[in-house]
Length: 85
Image 1 (tube, rainbow, N blue to C red):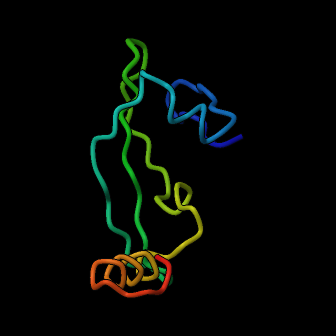
Image 2 (tube, rainbow, N blue to C red):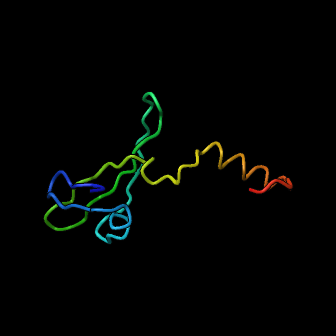
């Protein structure tokens, strides 16, 4: 199970199923400065019987490459480096 709505109990079994649900709307980001930093993406569950806001760890949508690594690759690519981006 990827995520369960705490209000209506709807279950999304996979990340793809969650992202493809047209009843979910991204409404914001909540920064979290805990031990590892990061934050939460906030989604509104827009069905008539619910309407709650779901918080999902942003890291769950990551491909495994850190933001710093991605930025460094982009900088090198834009600077004309011969190293692959």
